[in-house]
Image (spheres, one colour):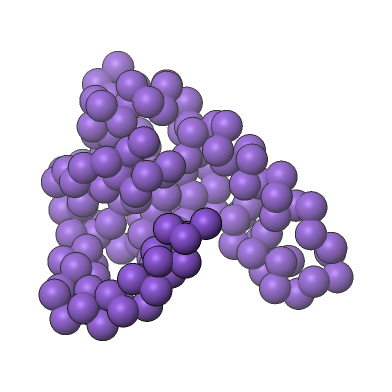
Length: 146
């Protein structure tokens, strides 16, 4: 499981250091893709392949699933860390997530998320979390009962 929160900066070439404990779980090569909240997600090859198979199995006549497939596959790249533990983030992903300097890399269970620092701070404002807490508690309660 990926856990923790790390603050880093993108260099002028769009490279980012992946925290060592994350690299140990990811291996040298993994997938970087667009996230749903204008962040970037990192998946192990196994998890990326599993999710890709699931979304590819839906009917091509399903408009929403076609949109998800386009979002998922067009916004994904396979990346490899260099000797310093950095990845090169393509410019289209930098622009999508607005990662222009300071970033936050978080563990999110089965995947990693990369956020622009300002967006992460806004997302985590107490009032934003509290607004969602009732709904989150209901979903967790449903899962807990299983």
